[in-house]
Length: 317
Length: 291
Image 1: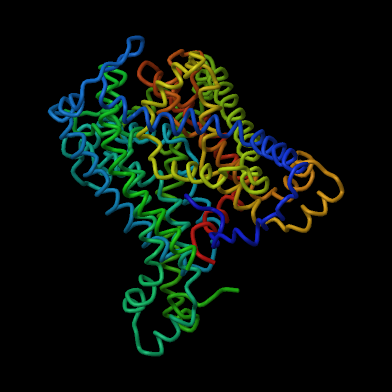
Image 2: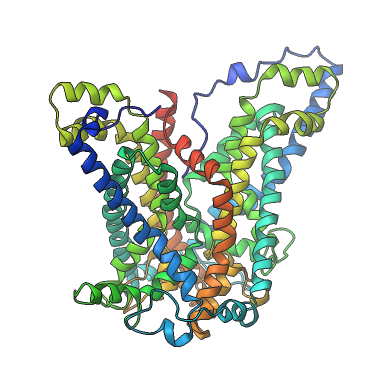
């Protein structure tokens, strides 16, 4: 849910007419006052951006090349942080887990909401009910969702295994098994976040002109062909946008592994952000944490750049 | 106003179409109830079961005896009032700071033509490209030891409030809205001799209610739902918001009490959603598609 106001081409000249050049002398001072006023309004926001966005971004890069523990003065170490982090056995695991999590989340978290939205869009009753219910988990705090599912996954009296037993299916270790833990976390994340995606798809589906379906039907296209040749091409842009957003979001996953599995079992759910957290707060190695942050930053920054370019291109079209 | 969708109204009107429609409809209702409502029901009632009953297999769908002890114990044993209050303070402050500073900055960028305004806006928008979580460690170090003044904001609500202002998305939302306000109204106010602050307060803000509502909801939800950042900056148990406290206390507390606390932690956000659901849902839908 990144954008909420309709995008419009920037129309600077219309919005800000160029002021007539002031006559020399007396007006110079009043322009200075204007500038002072403008900056008075900007000041609070500027300070916060400088302190908590711009400065940390620069500092992450600087610290990645320094040895630093709070209280001591930093020391330049070149690329030592990167090589140390790189050779940490957890490094490979963390990246593999993060990529696997992202891929699984894409597969499940994409197909399910799309099909759901497709079906919901055809239903003519209880629309408000469906929308509210599907969005309900999004409003439950992520920590609560994670704890809730941790309880469901409990190997003993957990609801997940109870359901399997009730259906006479073999039970699973869920979040406690090395091979099932990651998938279990993906299920939680999908459950918790699907509402937003479904609503965005629904809106996209509603903006498809009905004549297209009508024309396709007259041409003899059956249901699947209509989905294939009308629905999917018409929603392609939204799908692409959400895919990028989801990659960016899921690669920063932290709450679910931290709360449900604690990174375990046997590091099966340690993610990159979790590893960053460990480096900073367990190993007190802020240089290593920043080296990892920079890697994540570069990778995700690339996705964000593509995303912003595409939305802007679409907005200007 | 029901527009033509994938399936034509004519197909639906046929007996076979009707039968299929109602079958699918029922299936979806059942699916939604099971997938989204049942977990919530399970949580709310789980807290009312006795400690034995909640761990029993097979589980009871309805508690045999309805205990409220889980809920009352949660308040006492987990110091919920304190953590809830911390969360409220953090969320309310973040909301107020964001509203004041982001609105002022957006107004300046949109209307006051500051020198280097475009550069500043570019710098703000550039932060949208930086994934927030990847910056938490240097941000933590900044908050632990602020540059120049060398003060620590750790365990202080300011550690939530001030970084919340650096929200490029909300600021941009406000700026775009201010850009689109009719010029003649603002000019008329100026001709009437209103100052910058007066125009912002009496003309711009009243016209901006919709966008202020959106920003407010985003700001509140973001703080209430956040976990990693408050986990880092509040090491002092007494200052922790509910999300952090829940995880810290989840190890050593009875399951029913923990579940009750989880329900209590969810109530404010769910209530906010139920009250403003129309606006929230419309906002998500409208924002995502091209007009």
